[in-house]
Image (cartoon, rainbow, N blue to C red; front, top):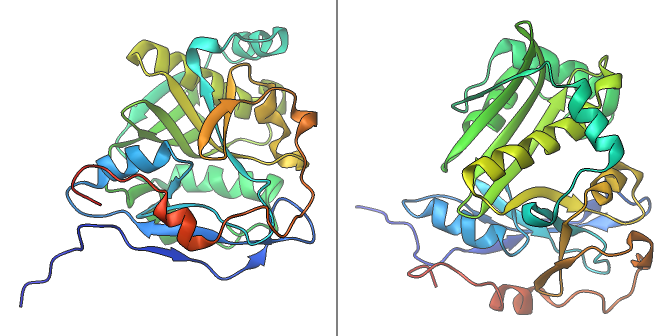
Length: 268
């Protein structure tokens, strides 16, 4: 018997678990599988609605009583580097960038382990082995690239990036924690803005911005940042104006959320 994939994506919800960004809260994700011949079209469409990719899954926050997490992207046309960001560009100007097919290497994994040990030693990826790392990099049904940044051949930073129809989505990045003076996390974003401009792509998708989370403060420092809130993208404005207080009516029921998701032609 021949089995075929359903035309319309099926959406599911994860079980609640501790939030990695705000203490004392629980996170829950709405997700769907990314597969089939039209995976790229689905990824493009849902990325514009706040979804992110992890291997063969698209997801976005759908917490029961909290709506603090918001998808963030930089509008490239509205971006201008700050004085400190111009200094970052100058300090890291000696790095060489190479974009390759999504293929994991031992050198990447060694850098990844050093990065996690310094920045996220107790995070969900702390126990990831080489095989799991390779799956994170290589299991992609869409057009993805690995951006490697080297200094005289030595690997300094890596970013797994998806190529969308309207921008670059920085899926995951890591770098040498010993090179703190280079501000490599900031430099990766600045360099992706440069690549997007060269390609004529209007947006850089950064994942989620969470007001009240020190881990996410850096994203608000990029001029032209937009957040996805209430079903639409809007300029970030003043970061201090966002309320992260829990309210029982802060999120709509799952069925209502799913009913409002727009799908590519032929997938509804």
